[in-house]
Amino acid sequence: MQKIFIILFFGVVMLFANNYNTAIDYYQKGDMKNAFIYFKKAANQKDIKSAYILGYLYTGGIGTKQDLKKAVKWYKIAAKAGNTKAQVNLGFNYIGGLGVKKDYKKAAYWIYKAKDRSPQAQNLWDEFHLSQYYNKGN
Image (tube, rainbow, N blue to C red; front, side):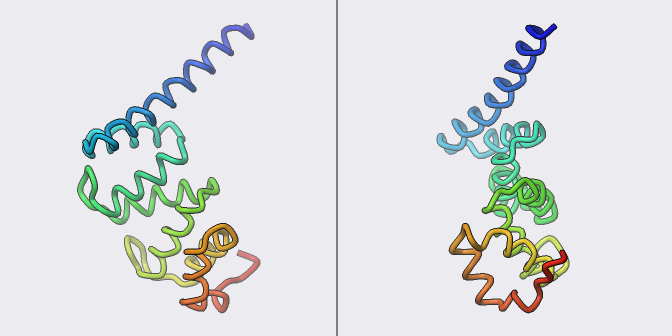
C-alpha cells in the first residue's frame, strides 16, 4: 500500500512539474498562448508560482485576453499562499481599483504582508500612506 502511495505521489509531482516546465519552455520561446495554457494547467493543480504568473498574464493580456478580475482571482490564490509578488500586485490592484473596487484597507493588508521582503511593497506602503489604513486585527 505504501509503495502505491509513493508511486502515485511522485506521478502527481512529475505531472505538476511538467506543466510548469512546459509553460516556461513556451514562455522562453515567445509562444505566449501555449505558455498561458500550461501555466493555467499548473495553477489549477495548485502551483503557486503559476498562479502568480497567471495573474500577471491576465493583467497584461499576454497569451490571453486582458481580464483584471481574473488577474485578481489568481493573485489572491498566490498571495494567500505567501507569494510576495502576488501580495504586492494584489495590493496595487486594490490601490488603483484594477479588477476590484478601490479599497485602501485591503491594499494595506496585502502590502503589509510583503513590505519586509519587497522594496516595491515598502515604496507603495510609504507613497500611499497605507499605515493609516492598516488594522493589525485584519
